[in-house]
Amino acid sequence: MVTSMNHHLVPKYPFLLPSCNGHNPKLRFHVGAQKGYASSGEEPQSRVSDTSTYQEEFSWSSVIFPFLFPALGGLLFGYDIGATSGATISLQSPELSGIAWFNLSAIQLGLVVSGSLYGALLGSLLAYAVADFLGRKRQLIVAALLYVLGGSITAYAPELNVLLAGRLLYGLGIGLAMHGAPLYIAETCPSQIRGTLVSLKELFIVLGILLGYFVGSFEINAVGGWRFMYGFSAPIAVLMGLGMLSLPPSPRWLLLRAVQGKGSFQDLKEKAILSLSKLRGRPPGDKESEKQIEESLVSLKSAYADQESEGSFLEVFQGANLKAFIIGGGLVLFQQITGQPSVLYYAGPILQSAGFSAAADATKVSVVIGLFKLLMTWIAVLKVDDLGRRPLLIGGVTGIALSLALLSAYYKFLGGFPLIAVAALLLYVGSYQVSFGPISWLMVSEVFPLRTRGRGISLAVLTNFASNAVVTFAFSPLKELLGAENLFLLFGAIALLSLIFVISSVPETKGLSLEDIESKILK
Image 1 (spheres, rainbow, N blue to C red):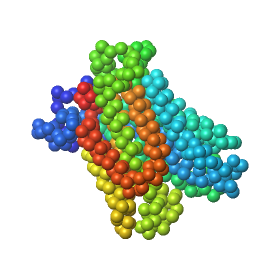
Image 2 (image 1 turned 135 degrees about the horizontal axis):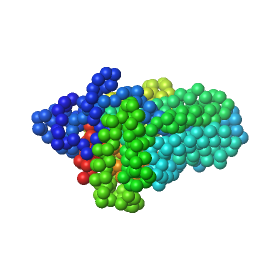
Image 3 (image 1 turned 90 degrees about the vertical axis):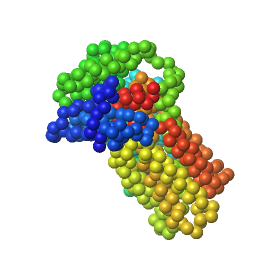
Image 4 (image 1 turned 30 degrees about the vertical axis):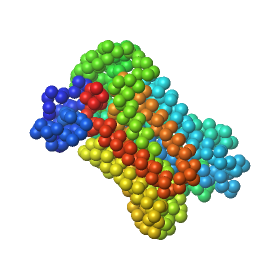
């Protein structure tokens, strides 16, 4: 790693950044946004021309819980995806459903499956309105309460309408959690491991999917098993809520409220000092935290001196905020419209054609793919703060485009070579999990200015769930209209467009503080 520091690039906002004391049992990190050029004067091959090298002292014990409890919100999102695949089978079984209304129509079944998606869309809109008022911590507590209510109501539903209400409430929790979790993690963790931790949240989503599959496989033959599948989420949500109650609020959010006059300036400042002390495992109100908060307040006052305390509704679509939304919103849009759910639809037939007998069992296929996704996401987690965001995105999206071209060729004229299809399928899943899967949400949590971060991320989450809904609804008619070969070709063309977008528009943020991203990249 780079060990020199460009003194003219010391950040304006120092809190949550370097404390250069280093002694055991603390850990020290030397972080450079690019390797090998800071001391030599060479320009990096990146959209960021120069960055600082930071060191920060922190204890891992103080980092774990501010990551873990918000990340449970992502795990519960993934769990719903996995559990629903088994719950819909159980729910429609005359023998095992345990209900008289098991004979669901296609529309009713569709509402059960997509009910949480509609709730997530509403939750994203709700987050836009209340996120900056509630703060990151309280937003995640509300999300946990909605998870508990939604999971419990669904599990004990006496009839379909109650079940659908439970699914909608659970979805509201998803919308708030997927907005609040990356915000809280990004704003409270040390900048040098921000990429690792926000990407690790994606790993928790995959873990949740696998947990849902496993719970479903254990309960699939039990009478009323679908109730346990959905209800299993409630105790996890209770743990999430209790955990969030024990954590401090985001110091960045407290300082923003102070500067905007949203409460007693002195009280908010003291709370920010105590919060930062707790997040870094320091004694309450220690001098180091107090000094960092004081310096940060000076910078914040200067940054927002000429701006109204309350921004307009359209502020997110202006200036630096618009640039941030194009980056973050563009990534989560391409994440969905490059066909990720649709490609996995063909996983079973592809594996069966290659002679894998387990592929006849959809659950086993899902578990195998899920384990592979887990492995590849872990690779991204390990490398995102080393290689950077852009290399993983460019390499991964290139792999996605190549795999889609191979799948199209397989269905067009390479049908006699099923191993090509299996390789293409694994290439697609692996490429997605080291690029769009974790990196899109990481970039969304990083690029928005503090002033509009809450509203900007809520719009990005809304874009994600809305495009997910469009792709889900359009998949079947497109499959019938185009056929598998042309559908993959279409997704491949979109993947090439997304690659151009990444190369031309997405900056490198590795090693930069959130404040440096705002001042160096968005201006």
